[in-house]
Image 1 (cartoon, rainbow, N blue to C red):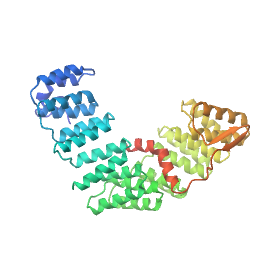
Image 2: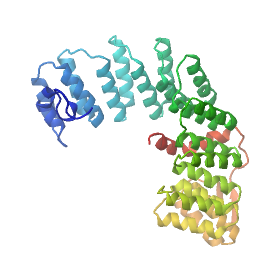
Image 3: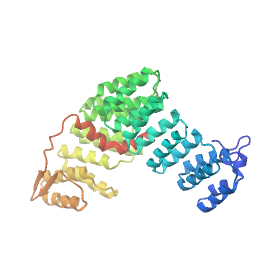
Image 4: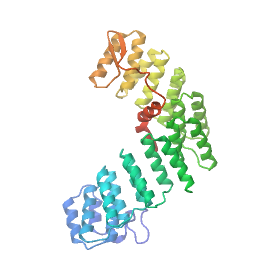
Length: 401
């Protein structure tokens, strides 16, 4: 909402709303719930006020006050329409009350208020973010049964749901279903489908979809290119990854920390540590801050190339920056020290890892590095799933940019 306007007060509120005491309380940092409750009880039914209160309390994540408004509406026998329920459910998800949101969604339908496409999409995307993808799928199935036509945002949401469930085939089938239904994909939907193909390990089909996206006059963004580069890296298509990275630069699309990290891994696996360090220098020059996974990839690149001293220097840099080493960090550095012949330091780091209660699949004792399970027991179908889990949090951050 814009500021001002005919008949509007601050923040776009109607003048009558701006002047009431509830508005004044909401504009303060701290307010008494008892006071809000008292003010509401003294007011006559006011659907317009209720609507604005629900929307703004949802944005402010003030769940307790929002529930008071809801109770006030029920006490005053005000009709709850789809907009009221949408604001209430939004607030519940924003305050991590997924169970409460589902209960309200069910109660709404009991009260004969039918969800619209916006609310269905909200439920699907929010349940997926809440790591409850199975429930999101049930909502989508209910949506189809109700004959409510999904839009491009709905399809993007459910494709990402299937990706979270590692059901790549259902994700790409849903993209095809969308087109069959006459819904035109937007850049977000294309990104979701490309990401599904990428994590499925089908790099060529992901690249083909990129071409289709460009033919539809949609510009690939950071998420698009990063999905492709990561897929190529994980499937050992290193030349393809480098080509995509070059195309990304020609298109003027800025790489993210995930993109740069994937490229460091590409050069690391090709035993080209100098190029990996060049990527690190470039990302720092561009103002992109390396994270733990970036440094892990760089340490691994050094360890693969027998550049033990460089691996140790990167580890020291990590600790200087206050970053907590992970299992991957410790494994790579311990391996580097072990291969360099510094068994005392390798043992010290292994002891530190144990003190930090970091689980490991290896034991270091008496100058010997022994694995507690067969590290070669990993088939092709496991690889995309494992890599997806490794980068899942970073992908969430990237999509939210």
